[in-house]
Length: 410
Image: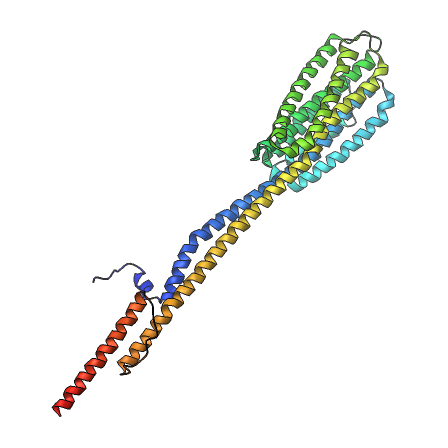
């Protein structure tokens, strides 16, 4: 019979049975280990994504208060420039609150700026805020400066964090809908509400006992339409989340209804007290400004209402990934261990009788024809043992015949 001459074949063929079985188990374990490695990296990526999203959501929740304080500072500054000296201290308080909120953003940027790429836009926020916080320019210049800070600083920062933290790429439809609502529709809605509040209050103060100008009416009407569009987009996105996830339904639904009610009241006040009113009353300015602030605040409360649920979603996703890895890894380890145990058992079941038969064969070769063959089985080793027994019998018979012939010859 012609022998194979493959590379390494001789080395393998010369291995004992236990080593051959161990080699088989090792080869079988290779794809299992490879799958474990793939599973580990997938699980680690899921955990890292959950951590990025949690950090991104924390970053966003730090930016929203700064947006709120800048909007409030703009409205109060316009009131002061319109002659409302009683609002000076309140404006200064808003400036201090904005400073604190900006400090929190700077802290977030120091922690996550390299990963999320926010250094440049945060630098712009600091530069632009320094230019507007003590502004005593005309209402138009002040309004434009605050709006530039929001449009070119805060909004891009929210978009950058949402994108770089992969919040907008979240695999869950409900989570993506909430993120889109909180980082796109909600800030733009509150900005429209803030512009309505600031312009409407300024109009009530400066046009007391007069009618609003056509330009003021046009601006307020346009902002009402814009705010209504952003509110509709916000509601659509949150409806998707609420429909997909019962937890969002429990946390968001009351906040959505409350924000919608307050927003509608503010819209009605804008139309009734300014757009369709006769002569304006400056005594209505304080209540109007307060209602505008309530519309903004109740809208911003949607972030707080959603944040706990979002964080639980991220944590649960990471925990599920870990559990899946542990279950898969545990099953793989148990499988390999069972294979090793089975290899040991098979090796013992083969090598022990083989060693016994080899010992018997040695003893027979030395003339011990009565050596006991202690193997009874129906497999190949049993048939080999039976062959040795027949050989023993044949040898004893042959020796007996030879002995008898010698006796007869003598």
